[in-house]
Image 1 (spheres, one colour):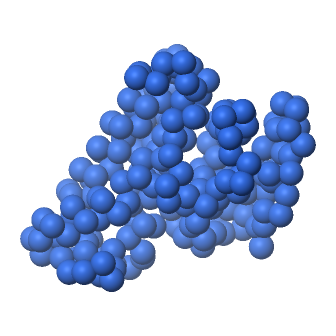
Image 2: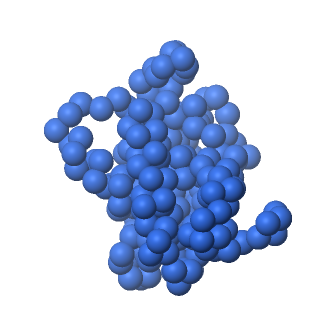
Image 3: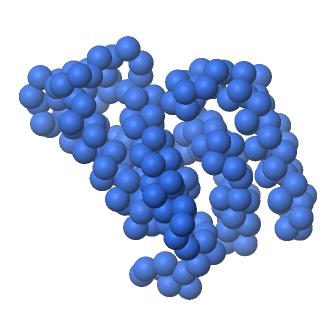
Length: 205
């Protein structure tokens, strides 16, 4: 199978017993899925655990896989549900904030360690050492249902229809959550001394 092989074809090949197909899927999507999880749970160790659980669930569910939706929609649904479960389990614990030093990157904020290799972040032209942590903290402060929509849409380019499938709500609700997320981010950025222009031009049409 070559680089033009679709994700869905790779998943079907893995279902048929081709382990190399699974390795290719992980190589293609590990970064974006990890970034989504990390921004959702806000803690690196938990994110790594959820990422591992995500791929384990992909393996365990492979025998039942049917290409009814895009593979990315399917895997983000798995990751999102595991993030929600993890958040519930950890709700009574004190977790690291996005501006807490972490691991080998001590002295750097967690928000500064997140890669956007495959993202379509709206602030890419202005991402710098000063602004990035501010935006990451603003995103982390959003309610979960708004944050997940914003991340899937702006960082991973997932369409509203697919986001509706991932989150299990209708498309109008997804668009409403996106509007609230944009407004919330604009207010938080302005309160932090940023003029909020990063959110200008974002659309929920």
